[in-house]
Length: 91
Image (cartoon, rainbow, N blue to C red):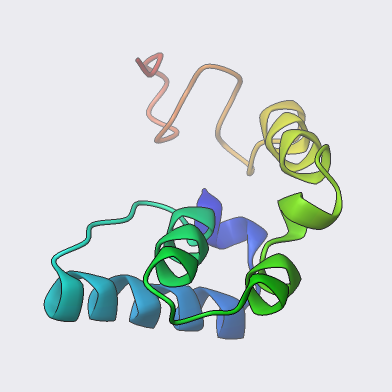
């Protein structure tokens, strides 16, 4: 779901950062924002770069709006409460 909200290029960048953080620093991250925070904490990014790379830091409600939109407008074949389109409620 997270990758669906990102463009292809952005998704590739955060996945590469996620991999480098794990391999070089032993840091596991599960989201783009987690990767940005970890990279900032390690000195890989300046404060300005971290802010520029984190849309939630520019607009605190952006992440909430994206999540709400994803819940309200799921992909075709996936209803509310479903995760894989199988008809079974996720949880």
